[in-house]
Length: 432
Image (cartoon, rainbow, N blue to C red; front, side, top):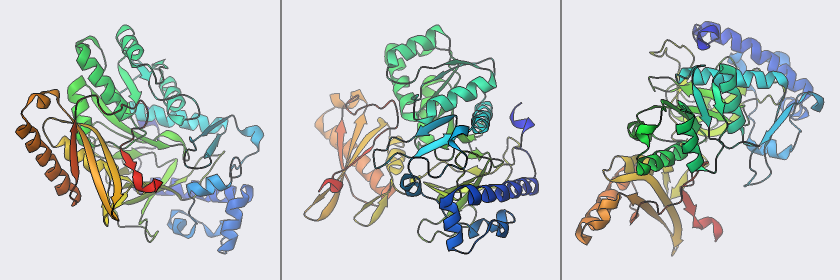
């Protein structure tokens, strides 16, 4: 097994020793090869020799997405451009794109990490895996593709955009695994269900990432499709998909600590939080050549567990993400995450995970309307029953977030489906 041949079952001391040795080399590399880091370290009187191991990690400065944008496109690369064999980039919808460069070794490590994640999800070289992430500058498609090839599985590079064709190929090729976003997996499940095609597929496993999703949503999709669904995590700045993945016990996502050093900090104080407490996830890359990053603030909110998992792995586990600090909405002084709305809806009978939060400001007071898709049968009920359901949903959401909301029930298929990252928030306050 791939994971048994690597670093996933070392003792915590062995992991720390490996990380320390690699951190020292990484700090030396960025100091001498990246002007941005050299100036940042000199500004606080820090030299490479001052970092002797992971116990010194807090002495190093943070890196943010703005730093990547300010050094667009290649200012943070640590090798000559002649050694870069591929670039990926974010969409750049909120500013300049963040550009990531990979050397040949970087790509080899990336594909190995994804192969380890697929193995963790139960995929083997005997499987046929459809990759329904977008291909191109987004890291999802090519990242999952290369990892599946590394594992030796048959890869069907479907990408996104044609669900009907995807389902046809899934049946014809007898695909046993699928890689896509959680929201797209739910859409595929609904499409299969409507066509009565679920008995006609051979799917056993789904590996989903690129957006937060709840445990309830995972369970719902598993029950619909009779499969096992796994959560894979990554971000292009650090590598792409394959930074972490959950095993069959679903008690956190195992981080590949031999390549990525995780920390959990307070977004307010920027200080480490106690083990087990929720905070912002920070990563330092330990083996990347093209774009090594020191203490990169992901904005993803999670906690960490260093205890051994039931599966036998000793590498750290991060909990299912609560959301992102930059996705958090502040409504009348209350912190609200879209994932809380989803969790409340999935506790309700007759609702789906399809919803839209519309935030507005009326007479200087913030308002929140939640549009919720409910099952078709509710729209044949009398008005009194619809009003009762609306009240029950509003109460469930208020109990979850501590804020009164307006709930609007909409018919199935009313809200737009996404083949990539789902959009759940329209904040009209931003456009005033």
